[in-house]
Length: 247
Image 1 (cartoon, rainbow, N blue to C red):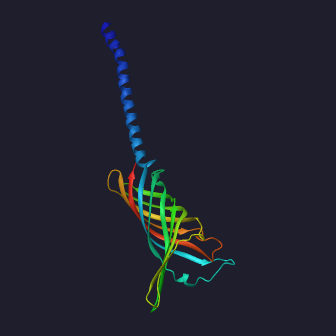
Image 2 (spheres, rainbow, N blue to C red):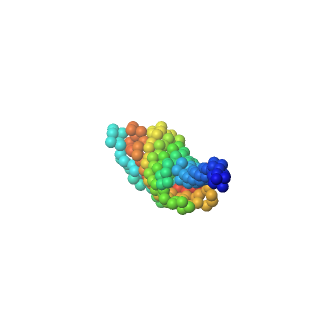
């Protein structure tokens, strides 16, 4: 009888320790799983990148007569050409899910046009530049990890900061003249543009990446006030590139 009772008694004593060990192992497994899931989510959902952006642009415009008493013939405006110009920006990207990204920020967006006229004894040319403070809002679809491919659509609320038309001409006496026009009285202070883009982002270290993003932007609202003789809408193709840092 003692031979039966003693092992049974020892088994009862040891059971709580065995259960505690199992619980600790189970808790450790749960903790490890939660940490792994949290790490995976940090790399996908809710993670944020900040970026610096440079943008080389080929800018042109759509210009048309204003259908009002102020309307005038387009004249030499039909001969305006595109203008190559730089823009700059900074912002952030937030990964809403594995494949969807929200992007916001602030940019110094620039667009414009140019004109040149040449005769045997005289010439006339100008460059018109519009500088806007913009808050681009982009929604991107993303695929990939170390190398990411993305495409998306965007909206650009823009506030006019500066207008400048730099005119240069020579007369029949071969005298060089110039005039800068900076009056923005007849221009809308706020315009709205939309855009589409595709891009590629390559990871170069644990937290940093390089990206390049071609983008086409078209202005939805008129640059000019209704009292002007024309309606003006910018059209811009940009090659955006920059550096991102994951927080």
